[in-house]
Image (tube, rainbow, N blue to C red; front, side, top):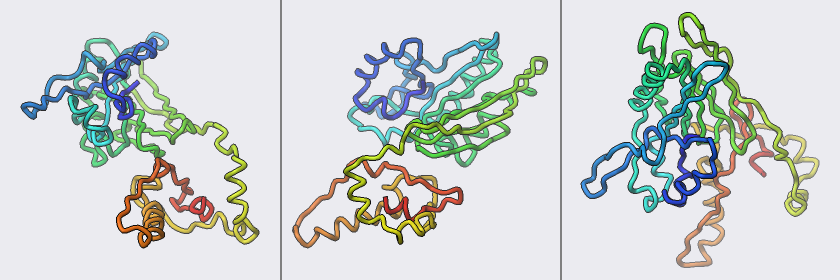
Amino acid sequence: MAVGNHEFDWGIDPLMENKQYLGDCDLLGANVYYYDNVNDRLGEPALDKFDPYTIINRQGVNIGVIGVIGEGQWTSISSSVVGDFAFVNPTEDIKKYAYELKEEHDCKIVVVLGHGSFNDFGGNYSTNAAITKEYKDGVKYVDAMFLGHSHKRENKKVNGVPFVQSYSRGSQVSHIELTLDGITGEVRCTNATNIDIDINENKKHAGVDAVLNKYLDENYYKDANRGVGYIVGDTTRISETVAGKFHAYAAYDQIKDLYSDVVLVGNNGGRSEVIINDDNSVSKEMLFR
């Protein structure tokens, strides 16, 4: 398991205490370093807290699994609980450990678990290209990368290496198939996809339905699926879209004349996902709900 920003929510001590409940599952953080706040400089890798990788064996083949976190994710964590740590650009750590796994531990395949999106690990291809290139004839540093953080469907390839991120709340599972040439050692991706999982998300709440049904008349359903706008950029979170900002301004506008000094605090609903159509459009029904 690659460590992510939410593992740090309650600080390092509870995280270390909870490691005992992981059983045989390792907590991986190859690019988590200590930070010297007194001298304002990067310290040593936090290898006493997190393993950089683990090795699993399937059908006689050693597979190395490296875990990293996006270098910018310290901004998603309270500084009071993460101030003694730094998440560095994972490029060199991935290359170092991938080489070690393949050359010293006879791993024929190396997979990276990355807590981040495609862009977090080099959307400009800087990191992604570096870790997917061959370091010797026919052998790449990394053969596949599983992503997770931004709750966005992603399925891309760099130098033939798949980068896959599934959707949120367990509604999808990323699936990658690799073929290993037993003679040359070449690893090829033959399939990479996100598989939909039925998690009964459509269970309805009677109280919510009672409110909605007052507005769901024949005219509403007539064009409920009509696209009324498009998501631009990498996010599908309501709080980070124009719709989210519009809702916030609308709420403020309703009360600003009633109070001379007011602060609005929204709950975590802003992290809810906007379900988009295949063409990135948002339907009238999704926007309404």
